[in-house]
Image (cartoon, rainbow, N blue to C red; front, top):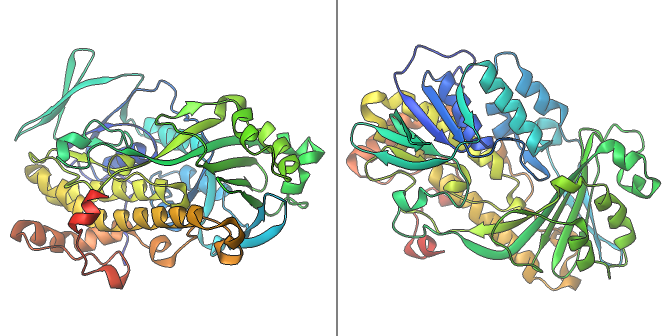
Length: 449
């Protein structure tokens, strides 16, 4: 496959793209659209873009997009710094007995575990250097579309463009605009504790040294599996940082909130291995330890509004579980794809550009999303004594057909075929999912999930 050039912006397309939400998906969309010649205006309600939380995994299908967003190579080098060379995650039960290992294959092909906030800052810094119009600390109070334009209202001032891309998360207001069913996400019954610490904090405490690689040339990952919680502790960037992820069924919440670390620790204080876990969690930054709900949502009828000038990407369209190791990367694929399909469709056919993105992305993103849900649920439903060997961890690992996909080449090569499908009303059969799923379309039962 030939990857479309995306280093320097081409001639202006004449398309103005308004982006709401400047997380990883929104910022990648902003940069990708800029590099395809579109004019970008971005809005974000947060004044400080560095989000709470831990780290995120970037597989090669996301990394290859990010490395081409910046002509200086800064983003690619930043991601490369956090390349992951840990080949497996050892899993222990609550008594500290080793019960299995979760393999982390192909770490030499571009797998990275990066600080979420650091990646956002790298993307934002690049966007501002390139002169993109990104506005922080503002709230979009209204948004409108008609056959000719789309617009948003901030502080009583209307900004007009050709389309609006919502990248504002699972609770996006635009879900009700693009679909009449499955518009409201619901709590899955699972939540995650997320935290991060600077690597030096662990080095300074001998009680944490069990997690660190002695020669600092490799990273380490260790997990502990309890009846209602799975705790993963890992280092990345050769010990530059460490992260905590705790998937739990023990609390109910619907909004992301900062929490005291003791809230998590008190739920597992009866585990015999608590003396290993506690000192590492204690080192997590107090202002970066949070509790996040894991939300589910049925498949939307469409990711694009009937009028055709509003579209959803990322979690706004398809909320992910951390067991997928693909949440951020699938948002990146959405973002890179929409920039290309808008450019190919042109200013006179915005709806085609947005619908083409949906058709190219919906089957793939939903298939990966649902697979992660199934893995997570099956693990928690498995009796503790059976969580051994390959069943020790609720994770799907790195899969070649996911990680080795080039979404930009796919969008460029498939645009004509997907456009014909949209124009004729014939189903589009994707080739970016496993062969056994290519002939499948979304059933009524799946839409209700």
